[in-house]
Image (tube, rainbow, N blue to C red; front, side, top):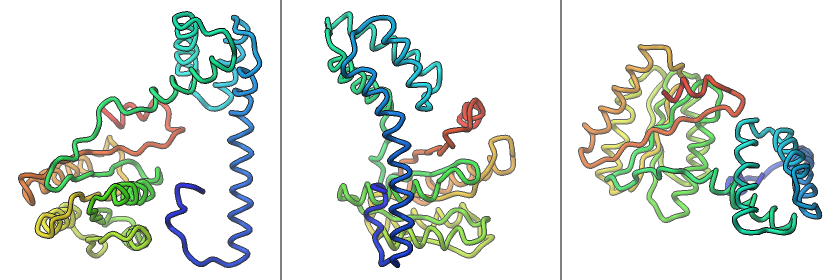
Length: 253
């Protein structure tokens, strides 16, 4: 529940117990898989059997097979290059390899005035929740953040984002259901520019990559950002479901 500690509110005893039950269940799942990896490496002798076991444990922990093979190969190379002798040393090295794997290769351009992040993706992948986390993250870093409710299609989407905006303590620009999303985001960027805000994080309606009309709408939204502020920078953040599979590549393309 750590991601949401900043969204605290008064809850009933029953809600608290349900949260604790879910937290305990998730903790068991997390430690169950990854503790096996820790146990595999900690007191092990480094040999081919260890690498085979580690690869199996990574796949059981929902790491894709190709990624699991790559991680183990990188670990094997590091062990040879650094002359690592113990499983504990190998575990520390694996942690560093995974951290490098998760580090973005191309940092976002947030130097615009304002910096605009357009959050896109298909329905139900967690765009709105991601926006809430980003809003809290950048506000914590001292940025003045504004949200834009560009999902004017889904019922109650704007109200949901308003709830997160209130909890994160950031302003929200919104319009009624059915409004032009490009116009909403234009107004948000215009307002952020006039008020000296550093960032605008914009929600959008869920859309499939093969729907030309909806993709054209995204292009229109992008143009509206530059019209609102020529000095704005625009980053498009694609949110994906972890179980989407190969279709995620098509979405990104």
